[in-house]
Length: 581
Image (tube, rainbow, N blue to C red):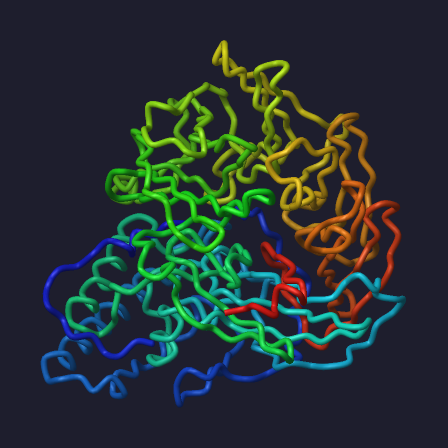
């Protein structure tokens, strides 16, 4: 989510050197952390104590390593005292489920420490010979104890990597060393406000003021990114990029041993000046990368751009929106970009009233914009209303020339803002087909499933993105927000096949790897599903590899460390790693 923290400050400051309600229910016990290491960014080891939110005192500030002058030392003391007073004032204030750390990071959402490479993992069954490369998955993993509210999406980015070669597997997990994480590590505590969990009401305004005061005094550098890089992953132009929509991407490098290293914040050689959403779309035919950037403070609230296969950025196209809007995902077709302008918006004035700035706007009519990929003017966008539509994720879209329509497949959520704000109603995520008639500029919408099942987080065959697809592989989010299995959905017939993990096992995104990885197999579903699965009864994690054609388990890789439930992943083939930058 794009953060209010990206607002600029003025002045010639010399900075120290910087390198859902998810409706979550606590799980019955805290899992054991099986790997304990520290991240190599400072002399201070990154130790983690058990999270005891809102009951422990704030650790004493550690500013001495920043070589502060007399003015900065005095300012640090004053700001730290104000922060402690704010925390003390808040300690008896109840938190909503969507901001309560004891809910948001309970059970297997609880963070883990880094794990260095562990080779020759136990494999049950046989890993298919065609799988040769590294499966990486991103997730939120807060480094420090929350001192106030915390939402799952606020956690620091951690990437889990499983390298597979000749039927053998290794595992490692590493924090993405964002500018935010590096600075907080040096200070030994969190100082960057959390965009969803903390920026509520008057206390959220106070936290912003404290943060900007630290920036003006040179105690933190808020001019070089505030993002957590915890959501998406894409391998493009020989680079692995970790993303969250509150910052530029971060470039990671996969080592020969299967470990991960953070290269740094990546601006495409100075071409990218703004944030980029966590779900850019890689066209499998043209190899272009399409992206959006949204702003919650100033116009233009939305911009579109794309990169050529060798990383050259197109001019930005400003897309006129009347209200800053939450746009987590979008879609592409062979010739168009599909832009959702929906009812979850940012209203900063709500903070003055004591509320979250992320709200549902019932007066707004959701719409979808169909824009040519090579558009140079916003007037080329065809806007079509699609009332009461909120898709957090869009799985695919394609053109139907015979009917002059664009078909969009996504999971429609209701209540639309329940990921961000506590609601009494149970969240539903319904697999939906939206048809947009380019001639009449009208839309129709229908639920694709007869079964009452929540389907969220997943994908289609990435080699056919933007083209007509028959199958989607989507997580069964039941009991919400846990994932009890995944579904293979026939988008033509509506038939569904379920793969259920069973017992007390839960997972996350089902990642579909086409056979042959890079080029794909002959049939659309010819490939394998990768699923991180955690057994909550015995507190162990594993990677399951399932044949996507018949949904039979091929292999299970036993992991040496617990893997928290996370977000999105990708697979980097061994042939692609040869040219990695």
